[in-house]
Amino acid sequence: MSKKERANCLYSELKLLKMKKYLLLLHEDMEQMQQLSPKEMEELGKSHMAWAEKLGRSGHLISGEGLEENSVQISGKDCIVKDGTFLESKEMIGGYYLLQAKDLKTVIELAKGCPCHLWGGTTEIRPIMEYEE
Image 1: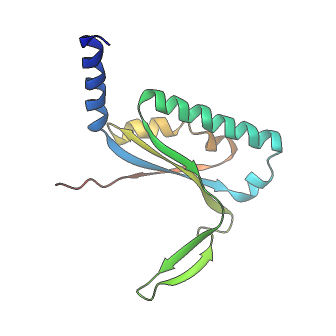
Image 2: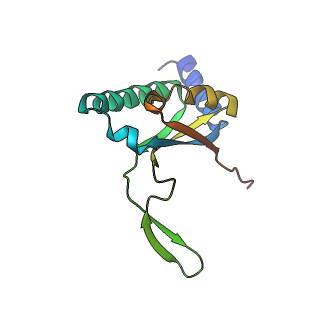
């Protein structure tokens, strides 16, 4: 690798380090998801993989995964454990992407391309808090 290529890599890495992190939660309509055919489910999975690859190439993707339907909630000082899905009965969080971008406006534009919207899903963007050292 030439000095110029190394300098460009370092510059790109520094730009990424200065980016703010955002959690993109994928809210899915369970009823609508259950109505998808096996072919549509496969298409949705491929769409997510392609979108994640595109985000990775652009330097915006940190990580992302699908989530299982079942969950556990622990609440209160007595640490009461409940099984659930804890959103509205017809809605669940089906997955997440952890993204990085220079600002919220950029993440909003990126999120518009999320494949979950193709079947009525919703994306929720939550900025990750930054703490001073």
